[in-house]
Length: 590
Image (cartoon, rainbow, N blue to C red; front, side):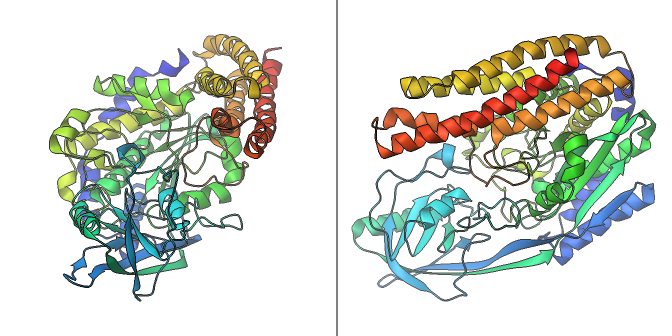
């Protein structure tokens, strides 16, 4: 299979050059820097990286886009009346600020959301009481869509109870990157606070005994400010216009060792090693460090996707995200993010490099996956993680980084989180994935897996819709494309011993990138190619996912008709995209 392609000798030479000398120095240095987006200590981190790149002679550029950044300064929460006492609280980036003034209202306790919805869920209970003028207490992290949905209930403020003793930093807006004119309603309408579980339990106990009045205040600074975007480039020797984008975020919550000083260190080491062995690279490797991830909802990577779209769309083979590698007790690779076409590549590379069997999963609408609307294949995000059994034995709940360590997004994400042996192993995994994308004669991506994922979603939606809507046109288009892709990959299998700059190889790889530009949006995108879907969960083939509603709707009702109209328009988009992909491949093979 072309997805398992490797050049053992080149890989051996390059991986042997990977060491901890430089990356561990990055981790130690960054562990002393609070890298707020666009802040002075982030600037120190940037200068550390550019100093190394200059010393090694690696070409790079630093861009300074102006982006919308939000800094949560403080929050207060106190019980008003007998037994009055303050509680420890934080607010979220992009939460409305009270300017320090207190808002006072009755506390209303709502049911929780459950662990599976803690990070990215947005669901509300089916029936809500009148919450106007109330302060709502609810379980969950309160990030993004959770905050926006609850704040839209008319409440005076919303207080989220985090699942442990720590209060995790986060961001409340669902706007992906700096907002444009379409971003209305992506910021919560009322202040959002977060507290630790023991304080949440104390408030619930009080509320069970009778009415409780609380006072809350927040201070949040939100402004447009210049951010650094650092991009290094190691040109390829055969097809320099084609490139792999390897990237991660420079900013952090507090000193952020596991999220993402270890990732920054990995990127710098890979820049050094790829530059040292640049004569071995067939395609270009572009390495980027973004600001604005933590405090601007991926503002840096989103700006880059916008500003460089006309280069990314024709030439980017894939993007590889590097976040939270090298953390303690992260001994396995479970549910590693990879779009379907890249899943075999990722699993094979991990097996070859570590001997471990990895599992892959559909990337969530998170991380710096700011290139999805452009139709660019993405893989990796987090890498290794601790086993579920160990997490449960420690009493940890799920978090979004740091190898599963619950210090994620807290003041506790310090040097103790990093593990040098795990970091070295993870850097080599990233190196292998990037090298194979850069050097494989045929891009090691299998878009049959993508179409099968699309097809599976369509069958599920058709089962839900029953006779209320017919998805056969989309299923037929997917089936036709699969048949043609079998022929396509039979042909590319004959090209695996040719150089990357062979005209036929170039032609087939151009077709694969064109496939991605059609199929990635079908599977992940609601908005157009040059917009960004919000930071909310997106189901497979989102244009027709509303079919899942039909079993719950009364035939002939207003909502039933609206859903069917939506599905008709959505299926047109899906069928058109699948047919365009089919036409491109069929013409190549004719």
